Length: 68
Image (cartoon, rainbow, N blue to C red; front, side, top):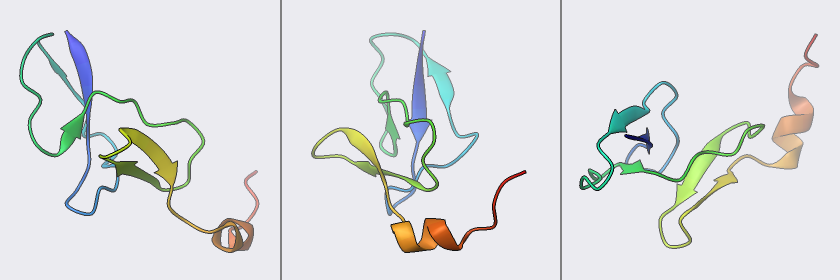
């Protein structure tokens, strides 16, 4: 069994959208076996590079209230 991670039509990660599938099974469209990177504010998937990246600007991140 392997985890696959869901993204929407704009390639944004859908939290709690991960599921287990049988290893060797075909991965459905809208899913990837590439695990999102911990610590990103808004994960976005690049299907050509097969990797997740941060999709918000540093300015946006700086505007967020500090975590407690």
